[in-house]
Amino acid sequence: MEIITIDIGDNVVCDLCNVDYTNSKESGGFYFSGKAVCPKCAPEFLKNIQKYREEKYIKGTCPKDKSFADWVRDDLKK
Image (cartoon, rainbow, N blue to C red; front, side):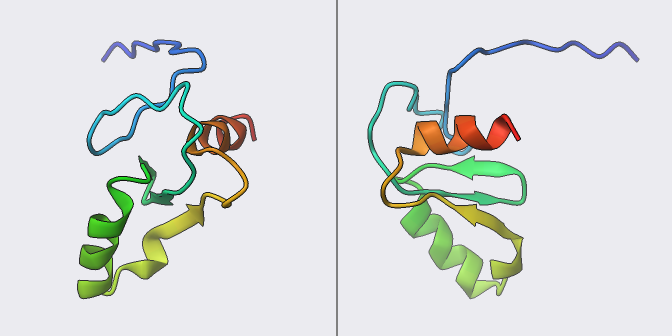
């Protein structure tokens, strides 16, 4: 099986709704089981997480003083 890797540069897109946050200063969102959930998707998605008691899969939350895009980019550099 061939593996293809695509470098997307500094682009940041929500893994749920595919909205581009690359140049957005909006803060919020979290990582859920390897997916970056944007500030707009986060509230409704969190309701389902709580409903099914899956909070343990939230691996990080964007700090209020940092944009979602910068937070995701910084985390990927680790």
